[in-house]
Amino acid sequence: MLEETAPFDADALHHLFLQVEAKDATCMLNVAGHPLRIREVIFQMVENGCRVCKVTADQYNTFIYDKEVTEIYDYLTTIIKVKTMVG
Image (spheres, rainbow, N blue to C red):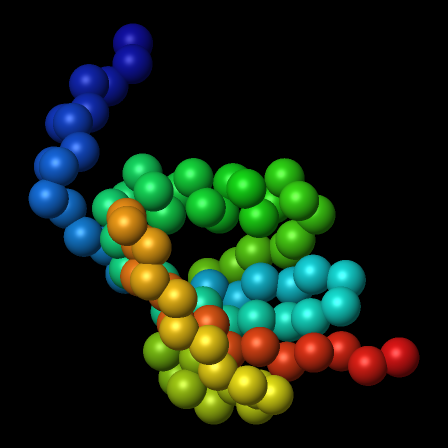
């Protein structure tokens, strides 16, 4: 028998630190938003060939990066630290 789960609160806000690896870059994301939107973004990254894993705040804060970019979406706020791989 399937367990009945409570529906998501429309005002819910979740927060995650993620490491995302693509062919040419490794990123650390500080992501905040509705859990369904976060799940949607992670799914899209995986579908596009990225490796995604959850990391700690300490790992995020000590990540050496080339530049920092802040992007704000209508449903998601993300601070992205990017290290571009050369060669």
